Length: 340
Image (cartoon, rainbow, N blue to C red; front, side):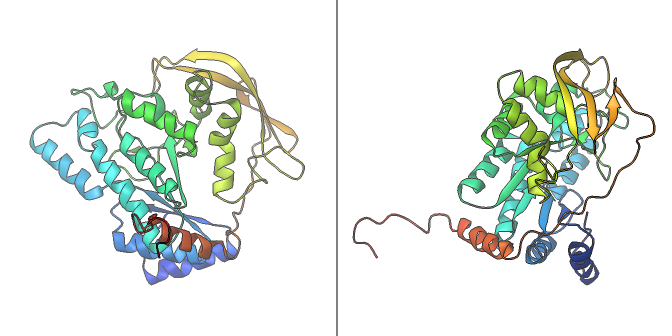
């Protein structure tokens, strides 16, 4: 559930959503200009009710300023997308989001991350013991900054996103973050630059094929880690595991029969020229085949809302204590034998 501010009305409805409506995660967007004060208040309030805050970490003021400067200089093509959101801007925002969550004493999920700096900050926070999760978008794992044409039309290009696509150095760091567990999951939607919400064009359908070809077949991830970053980790993060994210008695996860050897080089769209691997041959939901032969089966277009319960009582308080301890950089040191 996306939250616009920390007004009394929003705080009151957060309580109702967590207690009665099965909402246990709230999206806070720095990219939409949500203030640090609001993030502190919302993160603390969510933690009190056993809910998680997901922070879209981008420095909205810096991006807007840089974009205006580029417009003034006559740089209005696709490359403006890349130049207005340099890696340092994302790194600062990710670090600030994690710091604010630590001050509020709440767990936090940040993303999407697209840079070495953001990946390093995530890893450092986790090493300090702070409860931090993060995600990367599938296109950022394989799409290169070379897609930005200085003469391209920024209004119609699907590659004009926030965060923008980066060079190979950053992409290698993202894969390393997935392999190490410091980045826990791969998501599909991305934000068109300058637009609200998340686009899904070329995202949802290709997400698993990106991870299989360029993660598993490249030797970076195991097949089990592929399942974790595309399914199980999200189920755990949003407190619906093992109902979702597991194949076991009592669970109701979909079963995907996967062809590991399928290959396709995309001719157009966001993944043009990029080889994707693997293919969903059949999908079984609730004992019924709902996808086969590359298309949905007739008469099976149904679904059900899955409520996400709040995290167990007492967890938020323990998380809060751990978050406060993680902020004490350099205060606890080994002073040698006999030190008080």
